[in-house]
Amino acid sequence: MNTTDIGMYFAYNDWANQRILDQAAHLSSEQLLAPAAVPMGSLFGTLAHTLVAEVIWRRRWQALPPIDSGDIESYQSFDALHARWQVEADALRAYVASVTDEDLQRTLHYQNSKGTAFQQILWHLMAHMVNHGTQHRSEAAILLTSAGHSPGELDLIGYLRQ
Image 1 (cartoon, helix red, strand yellow):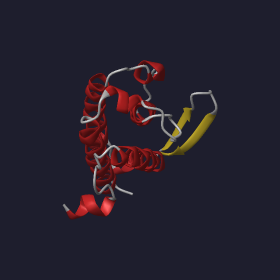
Image 2 (cartoon, rainbow, N blue to C red):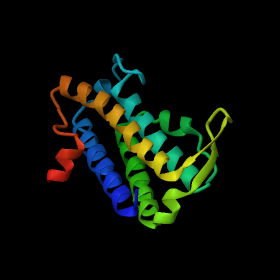
Image 3 (tube, one colour):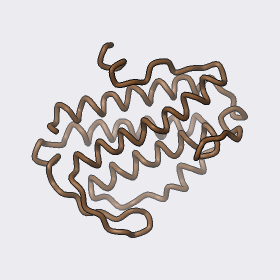
């Protein structure tokens, strides 16, 4: 993996997230918060979880202190969540642009939210974050499509063909 490759994956991640967010903006608060058969319980919960994961991973990569994920998960408006997501997208783009090929190969030592220690190669963790988002974007896409607001194509190849 090199910086060109990882940059492409994160540009795709940003593109796919924006497709989801663009369609979610059409829904009412009731629709966003409605109970749904997805692991995070609702479309809003799924979006908040995806954002929290991106914030947590970027901060780990930068050796920054962890955030209180409850701050984001407790948002009750889509506008607040969307605004925070835009801040994170900017921070993530800046971080990805700063990473070198050597950085991508380094072993990162970190702890999960339960304090368990792990070590993994940085590019593996970065690829994981994009893949994690893919799972939850898929869940969000099902809920959005059911509400009449499909995000359309979300596959990597769809992004690459644009």
